[in-house]
Length: 110
Ligand SMILES: [Zn+2]
Image (tube, protein in one colour):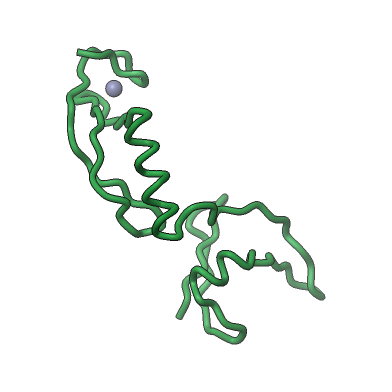
């Protein structure tokens, strides 16, 4: 058995687990899961297969960085073109905006 990289216990078991990115499954992948803390570790081959699957499904490179802007008395964030295209977002589309925590904002398309 292999030692868990997180909790340090010798409790890793081989499993097959689906990996979900942006709400879409990339497939099932071989992994090891710690029976003590539940952490899942994918090996390099599984990570490479996930990357290939994400690229095929158009899910690769959708994360982006930006800055808060200002428009009058309100603040705004610009959405990158690749996210607009991926989600087929149009100007005027209604959205719901709410904090998920003090460091995460959710924008739900209506
Ligand atoms: Zn563990």
